[in-house]
Length: 226
Image (cartoon, rainbow, N blue to C red; front, side, top):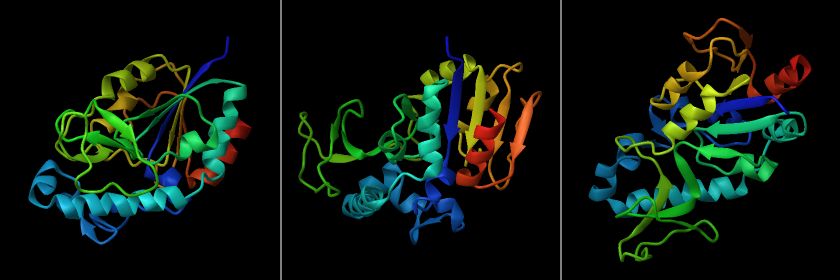
């Protein structure tokens, strides 16, 4: 039986594919304050602005390609039972070939009902228009968890972390909760590898291996260590 390798990925892994994170620019995301485009209040105040913002982000995701770090994680499935939990809303893990991916904060290539977030739909292309409605007759929005909203996948992700034989953190500053708390569910006997230029502090560090590099280079080191 293959060992269960659980990977938590953050914005750092997609940054090397050209996708920016708002934390790179002191709270601005592509020139916008995140609270103007990534909260339920922003959506109620100016839905056209929010819709356009995510249309442009979706266009960027469609144009981006998986990098060597994404591809390396997919390749590990040959030797391990790999479960990826990602804080990212892009689909680069799937396009790289990973088969077990849990999206904590949604998936920007899908839309969701403004009334019932459990109703989600694939988006053809990059544009989601005002006036496009779900089956309940309400406006469709990006399938993205905004600040102030519940993270429906968090309990599932916590269960996955509890059963990890090996745990890897790639490209996350562990600054966003509740996702950052997932490392606390990893058993203390489980070896933990952290790949990031700035290693975040973790309480569960009994068998901690630090790889202070960006995702692509750090994944090369990880493959050697494993």
